[in-house]
Image (cartoon, rainbow, N blue to C red; front, side, top):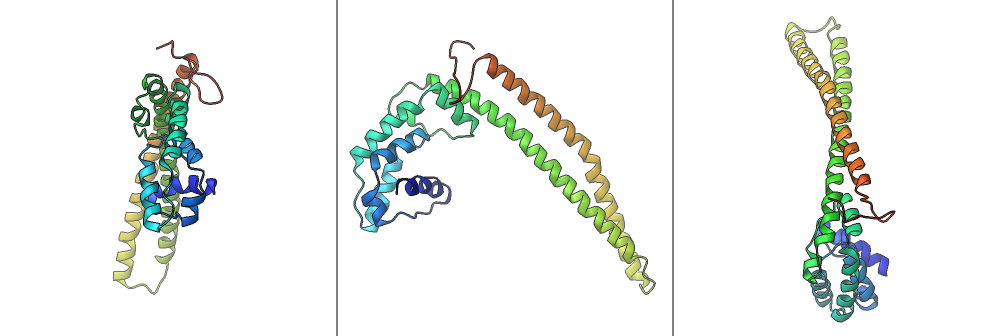
Length: 222
């Protein structure tokens, strides 16, 4: 049951849909639920969502004290530099949960900002690689269309108008293909530049002893 609700948390936030059941409202370990969601960075306001959903279903209203107790414990673990770094590296969106509990955000933010720096650099590389792959795929498809159009032009039964139309189509395809191929070296250069930037960030983070749950985090160096 617990695993089902934890999965629901992510899905419902993204889609706005609910798959809560009356059984979920009654049987979930709400202290553990609050703890898990807080460790994942979710706001205490999540409780209001669950309470409203269970009320509308005619189910048992989740005990707020249990959820709140778990959420406070989870938030204490979340609002650290190590957690902040991991959260930022994963592209997490901070929901002000540390502030909700009046916890010091300084260490968390230092880790979060460093992790976000890494995330953005990695995403830039990934996005550029995908863009290059899309470019190459389009170029390959365009090349096939060129070959197909050239074959059509070999037909002797074509009317003058049909032949003229195909020639225009072929010209457009070749122009498109040349444009795609022309862009590829620039895209590769951008990928390499972003990779170098990412590598520099990794070196900097290693030097400053930034890490996630596999290691440690130093707050002493700027």
